[in-house]
Image (cartoon, rainbow, N blue to C red):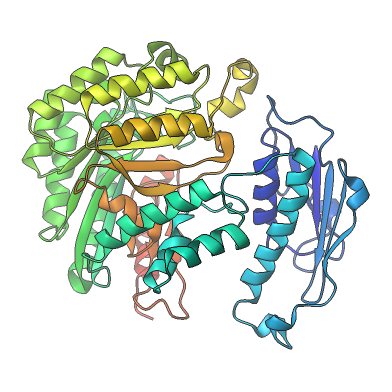
Amino acid sequence: MIIITVNRAEYEYDIYGLVQAFYRHEPIEIRYDVTCADRLPYQTRKHVLKRETGGDGLPNEGISSLRVTYDSHSVSLEWTGAHAGDSPYKVFEKYPDSWGSDPEKNKNYRLLLKNLLKRDIYKILSKSCGKTLPWGTLTGIRPVKISLDMLERGAGKDRIESKMSDEYLVSKEKTDLSIDIAIREKKILDGIDTKKGVSVYIGIPFCPTTCLYCSFDSMPRYGNDDLVSEYLSALKKEIRWTGEYIKEIGHIDTVYIGGGTPTALTSDELSDLLEYSRSALPMDKALEFTVEAGRPDSITREKLSVMKEYGVTRISVNPQTMNQKTLDLIGRRHTVEQFTASYYLAREMGFQNINMDLILGLPGENVADVEYTMKRISEMRPDDLTIHSLAIKTKSRLNIEWEKYKNYAMENSTALMDAARNAAESMGLFPYYLYRQKNMIGNLENTGYALPGKEGIYNILIMEEKESIIACGAGTVSKRVPKDTAGSRIRRCDTVRDVRTYIERIDEMIDRKRKLFSKG
């Protein structure tokens, strides 16, 4: 158990995320000091943030406790465990002159303090563990956003490299990757009028089965016909309001139907949903219409025909791995042969932009397994390939039932990511977007590769937060991105995750969006 004690709650998630990145399977608990003004005393808040897993974590001779004490004038770190002889550590005893006479009035003060804290905590943990992290102190999900923002302000590659290396301690390899992707993203974004555009996400929270690593609140499709019907009726109300609103303020750039598994719907249900969406949403200027077909065992000729009829331009058919033993273990309930048949059927029916998702670090998989998967995928030549690094989610069966799987190797490494990248590039695919998640194996990233001109535009827009996303369906999150970002911030609202609650409270869910996107 690692105990983190803080005297202020501003950066608790950043500190927690950084410690967790070094000690992946060590139970971590955040407590609040009795002096913490914005939280109750720690004696009554012992379990605010806590994640416990077993497994192949680092030995317990590392950090066992960390106390973080800071205000606008000083920062102090104290710890027990490895290298405890270096404790306590004064980051500074008086704020730096560059922060001004009253640092809390400096518009960059919070960012400066957070980065300073994370850099020094990182150095302590790195020394204690004897390792570095490929993304340095970056614990957020959008590391490319830093490079892209700097490019848009006219910064050159040297300046971006310096910031990523010096301020965030990012490795050269990941810095180069972020710049490479940012350059491609900028070229695509420069051709999109994001000031007037909006994207729409439609969520279908039903699946054939639940995968071992999945944490979404999806429900079994089969045996829930009445519930699916009620859900689609409520969803249409939300789609109708969305269409009416967008007609008043601009146009749609992309529509993405995800899940869950949208193709868990029957062909008639899918046809009804797509027809309704086409009629309710102003899609005449849409650059992309994606349906995440996802599970090969849910794809049929009839469903593909429906998608073609209603103008779907991009689909995902996801193998995750081409090793049958792994598919059986993770609960995919489809065969490699089903996947290849579904993919070639989609090609036969004229789909010219097909994405595949793969996951590295799946239980029991080694280098040979990944190389085999990449070889098979290379033979099929997808237009778009997303390489995920397995993330162990708190609500997933993999985490809840950890004892069953803890003896399976779950390793990802730079070598595996390089093998996947090399295979993608050999197919003419180049990285175009990237994001990260909590609890990722190897502290790495998810990267999308695509043929030039086949990039998933929605993926870029949502990752770089360049335009508003109106999300419809249970468990979705809408974002209002300000048209003028000066002094403004992105605002969000979510819908309830439980399907039955969503149906019962659909009018309230619509009203949340109405308030989010209202003027003012």
